Amino acid sequence: MLKQIRLVAAFFLAAFASFSLYAVNVNTADEAALRAVKGIGPAKAKAIVQERAEGGPFRDADDLGQRVKGLGGQAVERLRAEGLTIGAGQKTLPGEGARGALQSTDSHC
Image: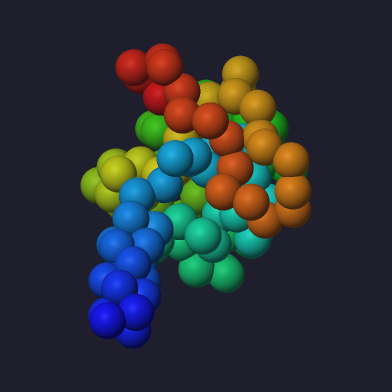
């Protein structure tokens, strides 16, 4: 019986792990935090961080899509659905590689 309870608990933990309480802010996240977003691999995370360092923070989804090769409008929208946020005013949570910033209340981010 205890084994069954543990199995059910593990199932629910795994199911809810995909629903993040926090989002990753593209303007403040490090490469590890960006890679935590489904759809961003090591190369894309590196490209985002490099472009941000060279060109400053991303203004919005269109700016991100124009400045980072391979991130067109549809790709950016998919990443936003996976927890990526875009906004200069967001703060990241402490901890390297943590799932970045609190969700923005800004509707255009």
